[in-house]
Every structure is written in structure tokens, then in C-alpha cells.
Length: 267
Image 1 (tube, rainbow, N blue to C red):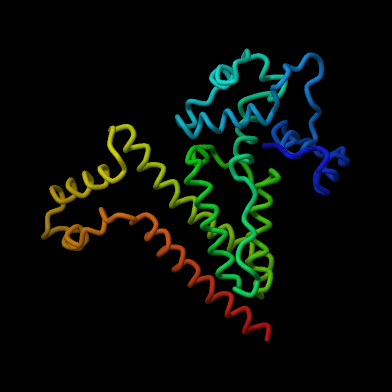
Image 2: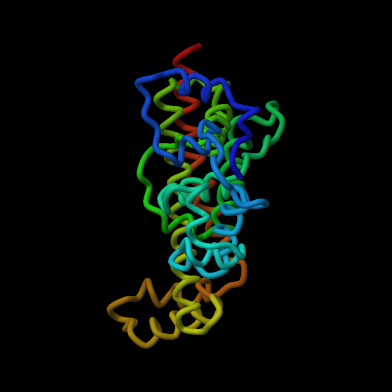
């Protein structure tokens, strides 16, 4: 969903006044800086409805299924009527991502500390990506610039505001954590895609992979791999959540060392 022009933020107003700022159509629409269709808009059709239909299609069938024609069919309108509201598929992808992100959670109370806050932020981001795996197929063309993407960046930085990290270290920290989240979600998306293509469930796909490894990995040549296979950890239920928790905690352990060093330096 797009930002209501009446609730335009201070940042959006600044951009509107800056004659040197040439924003792409997607950002103009996302920030509420683009006017509504002029002559003859179709009653009941809106940017929000178009974006919602596109997101629903992407979640149901994957990003390749999203086209202006398919969206128009879902909404019961002509394809050309969509272009009164969204100028191109590129603009639509910007708006879809902003809508899918939603607003970040408030997080735990400040007294719980930066670590709990950042972990909560990371898990919330993972939940968004897991619920919209198609987002991982959209190339990253720039740093966060849409309203909700910036809200997530702001929330991540706020998690670290009571530490002695400098501003560059704060940015690098949230990039590190968000990169881990995205990487883990991408791996999951790839597994889900492979499972769909083979007509199997994710659990069946991982079980088939383990059986294949057992056939290919000679115990004398790959003894460590065989130890893992014998342990059965690759097919345990709940493994993705446990692996994510393990990786996130180890990442936070490392960040905690840096935070402690900066706090000690500033005493």
C-alpha cells in the first residue's frame, strides 16, 4: 500500500521542494508525491488495489507470473487502464516491495538491551521475507529509499542507539544482520522452488538429498559428511528455524564483542 499524500512525511516534503531531485516514478508514488490520474480514472481502481493484486499473484505463483495483463485480469479491467495509476512494471515492483515490507515492529522495551532488540528486528524481517519469497527475486538496485524500507532501517539503527558504536559501525551492523537474514531466506526460497518443480514437499526434497549424499559420499573420502548423515540432522523437523537461531546468535555474539570493546574505550 502507498503512503497517503495527506500524511506526507517531512522527508517527502523536502524532496518535493528540491527542484534538483529527480525521483523515479515508483518513489514518487510511494512517497505520495505523484498526482492521481487525471482524465477518466476507472471507478474503484487505485494504486493500492493494483499493488495488492500484484503481491497476491506473486505470493501465489511467484514473481514471473506478475504481468500487467494478469493483474488487469484479476481486477476485471483492461491492461491499459492500469497505466493511469502505475507507469511501468518497474514502478510496480518498487511499490510491491514497499507494500510487502509493511512497518517494522516496535520491538522489546529498551531496558532489554540492543541484543534483544536487534534479534527481534532480524526475526521480524525474516518473517516478512518468508511470507513474500518473491521479494528475494527482485534485484537490489539501490539502498533503501521507499518509506517502509527506510522505516526498517530506522528501526534497526534505533536498536543500537544506546551503544558506543559510531554511526558507520551501526550501519555496517544492520547491513551484516540483514544480509544474513536475506541469505538464509534466499536459501529457503531456492529449496521451496526446487521442491515445487519436482512436485515434492520441502521435507521430501531434503530427505531425497540426504539419500543422494549417502550414495555419493564414500565414507573413506568424506568421513565428516557421513558423520552428519548418520546424525540425521539434515532431515530433522524444525531444522530451518534452529539453523537460523544458531546463525543469528553467533552473529550477535560477534557484534557483542565489538559493542563491549567500544563501550570500554569510551569509559
